[in-house]
Length: 257
Image 1 (cartoon, rainbow, N blue to C red):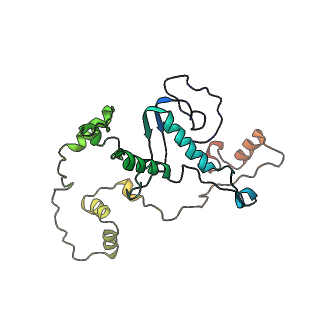
Image 2: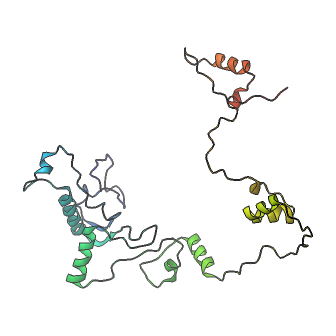
Image 3: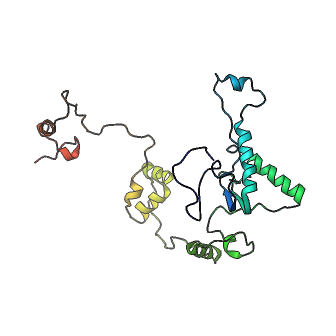
């Protein structure tokens, strides 16, 4: 949609991707407009504060929004067989409806009121493996992806009932006195306590706790000053050797010999 110039030629193949400006008056059998979202088309005019023409507009001044609306009308006249318009119609957060561009809404109102054409909007599912693409109820929803069809079949099939991950029995503990530390470990992380003290399993992934704050300590790393007279590889290696460090370790002390 941006009015950017490109050195690539048009009409060199069966499919052409371009902005709306250079191809608006050339007829095509099928034209697709992508991203006709609310707030993106027509463009929102943002003028600088020192623009005197925007502060005091007059009849005949150029308007970007009016130009975009005129381009949309020319595209309607250029489509000979089919016109496809796509926009983001549902929110990614709460799945609520999002209206299209005001121009698209006006076109839908004209088709409904003037030509009695309703139901021209096709709502696509969020995922490509939705079974709506493979049921055949709506001919406008279809897909040729074999892996998505296999995924839809597996999701539609019978789901096995979840089995309990532990079915064994453990002997009851005979200790009447419970240490405060073990009681704290049980309430802090019951799964870890069960693995360690009941099953006697030590899992490294459970042993590593996630730190609440990001560590900023150097951890015995040394900051090497840069030489004032520029970079000299030989001098750098000698400085590492003099401090009993390996160059590959980037300042970490070498193990004792």
